[in-house]
Image (tube, rainbow, N blue to C red; front, side, top):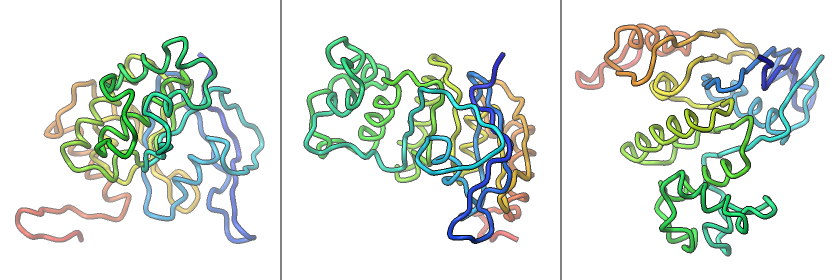
Length: 242
């Protein structure tokens, strides 16, 4: 099976400084859900923007799909357009042929199709942004910390929704996140970016549904936290990271 994303030697630097991305090699298969972890400033969003075609990049070779879609941390909805018009934006015929309505139904937002974005809750706005991505039937779905601004319960619901939608639509997915638990809940594979290179590339290897108490996930979580420079914590006993 051909990879959806195949990149060799991807490099990105700013103003002649040391490279933010340093000869990155990356392959993502159809239906694969990859989570990208890294400390702040490690280049996670730079890589995502490069894959989305929003940032100039250089490399020895690159294969990217034509159909790509991005969901950002902010919904970025046009306040002067209704929800369904936001979903259909830039996709000719999406409203007329029912594709926009179908995408809204996918995210459970049919009842808000005619609403104005400013009338939506935070979770509803992110669901609308997700519908706007899905209506493009992307081969590659790029998620740039899309749940970071949501409250804890809404975040869990959105994670479950994304997992189900990706199971049904089967795009290749790259999720940028700071949250190790989120990566373990969603991804089939986790990358850790540090110093412009991938320091870890690990398959999660646990079927869904997953439980955080699963000892395999707990062990992997400890390894990833250590890789990110965070020791074991126990917030209930007031301990701090070591």
